[in-house]
Length: 603
Image (cartoon, rainbow, N blue to C red):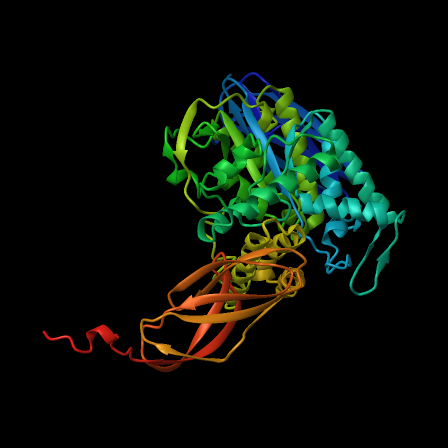
């Protein structure tokens, strides 16, 4: 005999009637008479009791209901004592009872993302973007993965408003699969119209409908999952973040048919350099961490349970890190009893913050899929939504879309550069290889910027490849993926190499001259780029701006040696401080002869 105790809501107001439900599960092959006692205790003090009985049929679950009125505020415990034919059991559940007051606004924010798992040829390195939709990861509780389960819960509890970030790279993979199917690098094929692909189409339609009926705020972001604050603060990749955000917001708009007001900052990797970028793209709000960002905030700071205006340009919400982490990481749930208790504890904890606005923000898929017991996590989340829905009916909670929150009353001027982890070593430092690969990335980025400056325009396909190489999921220490980083860096450099087609050679290898006297050096260029390109030539102290025309051309430059002797000197062709061409000449430099007019000079 197993017994589970539950309530309609783990939070009530004084004077409410609490509905109690006891489920008796008889795993034996015969009926059992069960005697039940419910004791109602307030802060350890016995207040009332209920006594009853039930016949538990073999192999079935029997439900017994009771109710009682809570007369005082405090933490109540409902204790169940049962006697099933001499076999005794005890269970309990807690109920927080409060005085009257305004409902707490609750913003649930789910960050659902997948890196671009596809290769440059369209084949997929991994299929998590699809598997987390159609695979029976949560069986037997739910026949599907976390992306489908979230959509299912949204429909089941349609009064619960939420905020969901579906990363643009995830949306693109879904759309591509629906339109043409998908193929893995191992040769596995999922055709358009297959059951797996049809499930992906279904989940897309569900999210569209939920957003359009006003249940969801859809957050956008940069296209992939880059650590924005790190890129902008350390490597000054303002241009990369700027254009990738524009593309990401356009993907969100075109796929889901909404104009996103908020954006998710991947890894909550913030730096103040992002503020103007967000303002430029019309971003209304983002969500950062109450544990890692909020302590360093400067300005009119109250608590994490209210919105803030950052320099009048962006509304910032700070998540309750403790509550978010409970949901994120307490995800190995052995049984239904533990699932119910965790859902009840979370529900009480929301009320116990006494916050005006409580933001719970976390990855939407990982706490389910990466659990050892994903079915039980699904049951827990279903129970949490059941509690939230009932608490909303009771006027204890008001779930909200973040775009519905009133304008901030407080203004702040600075948020420190950090991530939800309190730093960036997870992506640069925890693995020995990190340093080597960041050098590859930064060298490739400088190659790109310099070539664009020389050409006078953006090389969009190269920038697209760079976004992919920078996806933070590939850099995460425990899931380090050098295969895809190398693939996309290689694709970036292949594109740039195909655009840069210039050769340079000196007409002579050796030049004679005198110290501090000009030497004319002539260079020949072969430009196969079909357009004029602008570079800077550097040799010794000489710097000359060049416009190199298509085809073959000769350019003469004058250099002035400052040292006597025979030595080699390099000639560089650069753009934006990146060296594109390099050659050498040998100089034979003698001391200068005295000018004729000084030969007979007397002191």
